[in-house]
Image (tube, rainbow, N blue to C red; front, side):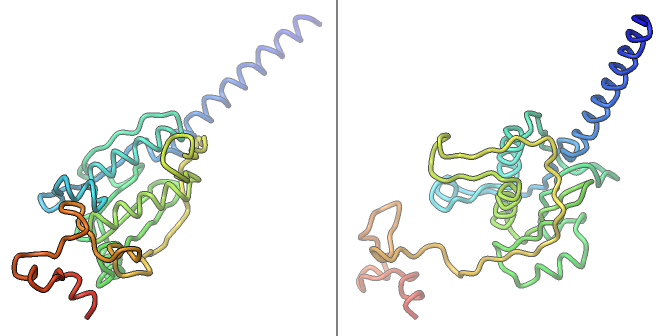
Length: 220
């Protein structure tokens, strides 16, 4: 009887180990192969002022930011790389609309949608974030993280919510574009330059009028 019980325990343990191993493989599959594929080019270069004040990140830095947060969510390491010939599955893709990996239909969907619009499409095998510009790629990346439950309620780790998940796949197909034209106006004090302060009036040509070209265009 004891021998039978021991044998049964052995097979139960072996079965449980097999299920656990299978679950691990499924979990890896649920992490899009832990790969983030991104294409970069010369036009993705941004200045330090762009990064600091305009919040612009080159696609590679956006991919690295995504890898960081997915690592926090899953406890796994995500790698960032460039597209490999013939390999279009098992990864997260951050793609500009003019990439060879983007379909003509998606390029048409994004046509005339501006710099900040993006397509986010995912299933169990891969996720694509497609945009006309690096702005849209960043917006799509953070939209994806928000769909997974990440929240930045205030500055600092105490106000950051990062759920623990073994599956970061997302079933989605959505075109998103902002509902506003500009991010630059501050209603509490007019137009402001981070470089020279609130008295900024633009170029030497516009200084005499006391208004910058942007302010004149905004008023018009």
